[in-house]
Image (tube, rainbow, N blue to C red; front, side, top):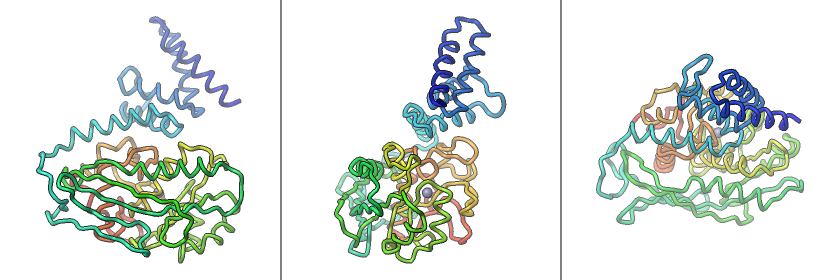
Length: 365
Ligand SMILES: [Zn+2]
């Protein structure tokens, strides 16, 4: 019923707003309906309001125009608008390209901020994600290999093939070409297998039953993971990664717990984006949330020049470790390189463990 209402409000709103033919009252009435649809979670209405505001055709009641426009677009993106995601991505990318420019350099083996060669070679049965960096004469390639072990705690009926495919797509979203450490090209490649084996794997577990039972039964995959930590994570997020928070290393067990808003694990788009975000944790990258439960204070806007282009409003960034709908950025991949080369978890923000933030921040990509 709610859906019908908001779709109807939006369609009427569009008619009145876009076909007002100079009739200010009609246009105002259309806008009212679009806002009402937006408030009911309509993705398209949010997108329209965001675009109108971004283009300067609409002024916000309060607050800064561009920030408010980005707020609308982010809401549209969260409600599933692919157009909003594409626009936010393009907007941030344009700002980023304007802010960061690299001198074209001769292809060479990857070096860090200090100019020293970066070496990564992490392999073996006690390393769930094998990582190897090599320069092929034209480009640096970081190859990450892992076995993805899909675990099922109950025989709840949902389409496992589609669920698994969506998750694998989300993990594969990390693949691509990036520019790191001052514009050096790096290609991230994934080699994934999906064998049914416990050893040397990343475990992916759908949470669809009683939480405490699930935590018990996954104990054998998560090793020393603290139960309270799991409980706290799951209460505040829809999904999470068990990576040994505070003690991530290339050797720790890595588990991704998937939850489903519908309980049916059928929202492939959401599953994919969640898997993309959680895989970032598996790769040793922290959250960018302004979330009190984790003692994380958020990343103040404009604190770091290299990610300022991705800042939307408040402490929201259009970056995958802040907003799972966002794509993977250069900075994220720079953090993955540091995580595997230094064998150290990379943080966007200080937490109560007193550990330092990632060297990737504030140095320019
Ligand atoms: Zn997270």
